[in-house]
Amino acid sequence: MRRLPPLGAIEAFVAVARLGSVKTAAQELALSAPALSRRVQSLERFIGKPLFDRRHQAMVPNADGDRLLTQIAPVLDQLSDAVESLTSGTEVLRLRLGILPLFASQRLFPQLGRLRAAHPELHLDIDTAGHGVSRLGEGLDVAIVLAREIDPGLYARRLDRNRVYVIGARSLLERPDPVTRPAQLSQLTALLHRDMPDTFTAWRQAAGLENIEPIAIDHFDSGALMLEAAAQGLGIAFMLESHFEDANDDRLVRLFDIDVESPYSYWFVCRPRALQTRPVRLFHDWLIATLGAG
Image 1 (cartoon, one colour):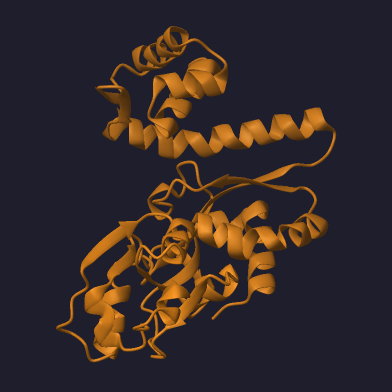
Image 2: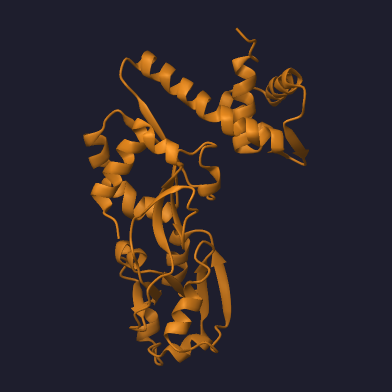
């Protein structure tokens, strides 16, 4: 049998590679930072080459580190699940899901009780860090992402079709000069999500207002915070119809009755081979049956 590096060294490497920080990884593994560093160094000595670019307060996997992480992380996760299943006395299937917080809170979490009832053995590890597609196979089994289109090399299933809504505070309709005309956009700040940068452009073109510019464009990486900013009167949010309907917030109104198809959709995405695993297949089939597909 070929000699393998210590499991603790492999575990330390995966934790640092995923978290990007020795300190954070040490906390997760209940080790001191020096002890964790020694484990990573022992793996590098075993392999005979460095696995990280060491930067100020950060550890970034180099090309060799990325290649090793891609190959070894899923195996370590499967080993962890196997041990958990044996020690708990019940079957445990674990799915590592990358998801945007707003979709999770509005669409997924209200339905998770049904998933648990249907498949009590399936447990989800939720990751909202973003860049889900690029991390498939490297800590994530599945991602639910907001995108125009998906790399054809991946398995993808569209979860919805949407329209772009202009969402603002109800007070915008109650002030002396209510915001009822698209041309009034020049007096307002536009709020855009970084994952949907073209929503404003698509809406503006459909409205025939290509030349109009808002006072400013503020960017967010949180849909929930965008909705709150709009409710507080900090700007008008260019988001999806489902975001507005699911928010069910009396402080918010839809502005300008202009129908614009969204260039973005929510997608279920995974690597094709992942769909052959039981946790991914169970979650995929349940998700499609529960939320439907556009």
